[in-house]
Length: 634
View (tube, rainbow, N blue to C red):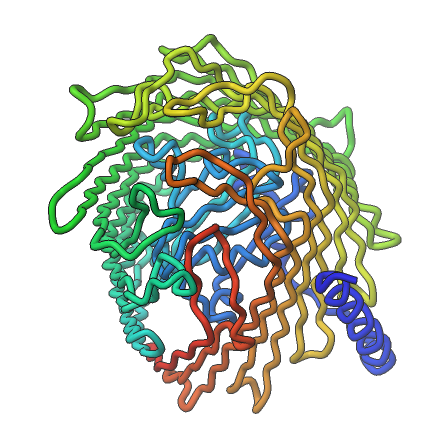
């Protein structure tokens, strides 16, 4: 029996026994405000009204777990596989439901941050958790709502914004690998204005990117300087004008391969990446909010400089510009009692541009899109949506994508059924079309990748919803899958399938004891039946949170299991072969104690089992480590 199976059995046994005993002594129903989801539709929806599979991670959960990188938080989300290529800050990929990493769209404060100069993929290696309000993970093909890059799903990250009053905070910590972490900020606002600012500085000596077990003792350090700013005004009633900006500088020492050496080797290489994101948004409501309008402009710019032996070896710049206008009209119909309608129209213009040191001129792709969505709620129990999109691109044939969802709440039994079906499209990246380095030749004849996916799930509450379990089956089919072949990229013929099961459980075992568990089975293959790399079939997690001493103290235990997986190995002549990576289990503990209502001490232990493992073939991973610090709020 696998570790994942044991985790599931232990979870079910503990929760059932504890909840049964708790139910004998507690009769008062716990009422909470229902969670709102913003990424599953063009309008805000209650979680019970969403037909797509979505997971929401709140700021409170992030604080309790104590992780520093967003990618580590996402390891607990059903359907997600995380791979980091070596030390802290190294290139980190996330795959959803067996889709490729560049088939996941990442959005931060409304800005699409996939890098056009990096295969239209987002690197999670330098994304810290500082000042994040919530993370929403939307799974399944979402191109009808979000356009290209959303075949696997969407990861939407929302940072904290200013509210009425004033708040400030500062934190500092240190620990293993000569790690130091500083974070500070403030926020506030009045009746017609709001503002927020935070800054972070994270540094570590790290470990060797090239696996130390292969004879590579040199540590590779990492530093991040990060800043976020937002401000907004409400000059007149129902009119909001908001601006957000984000800046990150990441410096990372790296290793690499040399000819006639079959594994990674300690090298004097490094990379510096500058990320700049910004967005301006105007929202105006009419008729008491029945008719809303929103217009925005968003920009992202990512500059990368790679060096070898203190000499610049390669540079790249990826830019994205997006303009959009969206209007939604909400209405009710007397002919159908308890029927609520929302119709949305969306217009978009997007331009992606790249320039590298190996290219004579910059290249770009422009896309104009029109999309619509219709949401219908009947009798407060049945919620339906239909959306469609038309994309007109300079480089490809016009594309049509669509999505339908349904959610039905059976209140008598505490059961919720949810399902979705959607089509997706992923345009070839600019690097695949026009080349990237002097050794990679672009293929201008590439066709967009296309997908059809569906899922069906049942969510069931027990013990007056103190335990909520969700079981979802998913299935996707991708055609024209793009893959590397020699020194270029090609479309694979046939259909590449992926299917699996996601199980999640959220339990309030006692008033001060909470458990969250998940398990995912994924079977992702290419058209010829070959198992796709970096898609473990079994992934499981268990998170236990315990509050005590009148809630002044908190202990959080996290267990992440990653099953066996395949990966790619490059020979001394750069030929490819497939190798297997063993399963591993990571155990982390985070503890906090409030010595004052405004002062908190915290300590965290990671990889407490000192697991020796690989997430990517040939790259090292950290052993057991510890960190501690203090946080002050004022």
